[in-house]
Amino acid sequence: MKNFKCVFIALLSLLSLQVFSQDVVLESGNLNFLKTETKIRLEYDYSNMGVGEYAKEEDYIKMKVAEADKSKSSSGAKWLNEWNADRKTDFQPAFQEMLNKKAAPLKFDSSYTNTNVTLILTTTYMEPGFYTSGFIQKKAEINVIYTFVDSNDHSKVLAKISAKKIISVNTTYAYDLAYRVKGAYSKAAMVLAEQIKKAK
Image 1 (tube, rainbow, N blue to C red):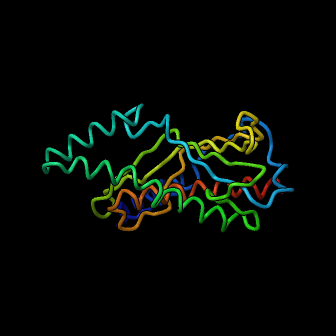
Image 2 (tube, rainbow, N blue to C red):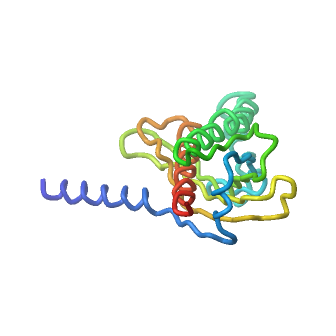
């Protein structure tokens, strides 16, 4: 019984470390300009992203497509379609919804066309994680860069913040990859909203 308690306490400690271990750094500028803004355009960039043990997303994709085709003929194409679609159907909506909730009354939307400021969310690393049963799991995790730029001239950077080890808030029965990863984007929104609150 004593050993069980020790293991349980160790698991709780590990969970606490995972929840609060994100590393947030203000790389340049500041967020003071947000005090005069009401709407921010959202854009997303996955063009230079590592995935899991792979430094390049394209290498991860090759591995997963080949793996899927081995298990079932032509299922690699289905996996790739879902992998690409998850960004617009799950990851981006999760980020936008949570950011609007936590950073209110400031509003963020990818559909805005007439704003002074644009936020580019760049994903530099993604760990999709896995879930089998019980404690046999690895939570999804992302590294991102939040770059606020002039909407008319993206070369004018107003502020740049990097955040690493952002771990998914979606854990219970997280068998689905999209469900796990979108939880990391929800957490990324919380991290940014906290920085915005500090600036106000």
